[in-house]
Length: 138
Length: 298
Image (cartoon, rainbow over all chains, first blue to last red):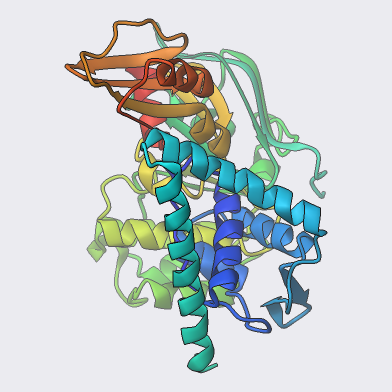
């Protein structure tokens, strides 16, 4: 899992970390039980404030995505969405709305947009299958 | 004496300072909460170093109050200096002393000195402990100064233009060290105040900043809030870009069918307004802190 911070996105830095860890989990780049980098090396690597990474990890923990084992570090939780279905749908709806607005700006018609979504789902699926076939060495 | 977690690490109120008749700092206010990495940003000559020197009691303010870790640096100079460390932009050591002797000499003034961190950083910077400091490059001298600032594990780290004149690799290592070695211990009790005009490289480190110009506080904002508030909006129209006024827009540029502007807080409204004009394309992106700096001071 390689994270990248984009200061031009307008999204708070800690939320970018949260979103990317979740995306990595969804794409299979990070698998249940796998450990996340600890706060210090990740902060150094991204050259962001240590507090920002700590805040992101706290957020991921409160969302039930990761768990902290004292003395061992942070790990991706299996089946990591304890949120109720409506809540999950609502969170996703907000993201979809953003994409829909963007599609409108870029003048991508609805049909083409839906086709693109299907295509991305397939790409993600393929990535997940590939990483399941060849688990990374620990 | 322990710092109260709610107490600001630095509290400056209505600070005034002048060099002779030349006013350097005017009615300047600054609050740096404990545990924060705070950026004091401004052009050369904006008054940043004067503020730093007032914190260290190297200059006596003409007016206003200065509190560092709850103490008055003019009255409790020793206690204040015991609890903070300072890295100036031009570092000077006794040139005949070796790196080893210099670090031992500086450690002798400190009640606490983390030898393990020292060993780790000397190795990381690939410094030769037997070399005299007079033979070091500017980058290496800054590295020695940073080691000397971090090893006492102070509650407050003051960095005054620390990376100006250094090469990119040394700058990177410097910032990584501040994040890694300094911020690691006791979160909430490690406060950083960094003054710089090299904003891009500190972008990720700074979580709140004050923009200073001609001795005055121009803007104080959280870094994330700033990037949310300042947006660069670009629109392209099928015909000539309409000559419409946009509320709260800075720096509006028109070029044929294209329009570019910087929104200060009114981004969503301006986007709405533009959308109604049926542009061919419409995009927006956040300004980096450096761009916020330029847009505000231009």
